[in-house]
Image (cartoon, rainbow, N blue to C red; front, top):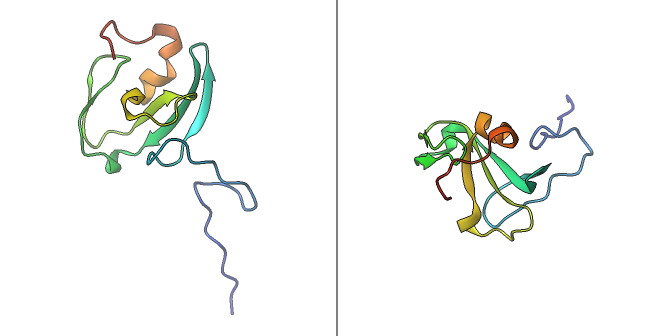
Length: 104
């Protein structure tokens, strides 16, 4: 009988530790450090989302079906009011331009 490989979770190599779950009900997240502090960041695939959000980086809508990231301060214990949905490119360039003048 052929050997059956165990499925890898989240693209991790076999034997690696799984990332810890950060935030309540938010799924898997990674911690990113930047000049603006430490952030919990979770990738949201486009197929998973069915709601429209406003990106604080460019002040444009993130329409349903658009892949993006959700970020919240790393020192936060998962408060929903602190989560922000960002376009991927706005999140990666936030250090160069920061959020828009609109208050989150």
